[in-house]
Length: 120
Length: 237
Image 1 (tube, chains in turn green, purple):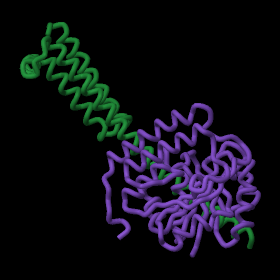
Image 2 (cartoon, chains in turn blue, orange):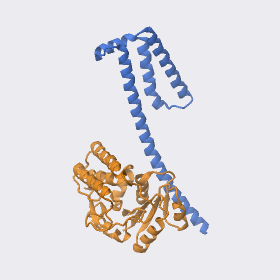
Image 3 (tube, rainbow over the protein chains, first blue to last red):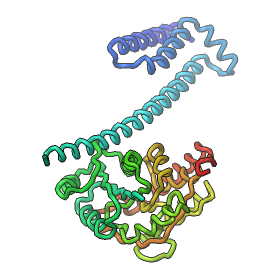
Image 4 (spheres, each protein chain N blue to C red):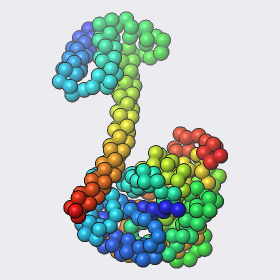
């Protein structure tokens, strides 16, 4: 890995980290979902600051160019995040469905109570 | 036996009144509940003005989520039997008791009104029949249960089945998926012959080449369901 790439990577990951913290502070991102991102940003910083880790990993995984390892890991991470987003959406959809059903059941009771009251 | 008829309704302003009135005239001994799945036409107004018993969903949940709220209502109000009947006039309330009977006699936990057992009445288009046949074969392969009319929304459930559906009901393609999940959970599922009519007014949501697309999606969902959930035998013992 060239020094320029190293610096770019470092700058990028520090920006990412800063964005995550900013979003956490503004309550745009919940702690639960920030963990994966924080872990990712930390790993990127580690790669940029200590390229030795990348070289060792490259040798273990038998990948030609060290930077390809960084790209491959990036891609894996994005897949992981996408999957976790799908999980979150599924759970939200289920909760929204339950809520809508409960709301409809309650609305019916309120409507019937109101009708009863109006009759008196 | 306290019996509740669930009538899912989405944009059925032309049909819903005659469907409910016909039901009341044919079977005065059963309660009914129309589930208005956030219709965009005047369905809700029709329901309100006629003083019908109805649930009004605040957001469109689709047939699965809508029917499930009906099962939740049936569970909360202690009904012994719940029957689903479409809001488009396809299902004739004259056959209601035929569908209820096997459940009332506790021969079955869920009984599906099938138009293919005696092959009479409206048999739907060729494309759809082909799709239904393939789904039927697939369900047979996946859980060993032979059900002919897997997409029929005319079905009766007993109180244990109601409790199960109130908690787990597929939301995407609920009719075939419900058969699979009920069978895999040890419930007894079967069919009773009924006659169906062509829908009375409005338009169906599945037309043209959509049956093929629909069938592929349903098949995949069923296979995924079967892979994801293992068979539990204990539910009916």
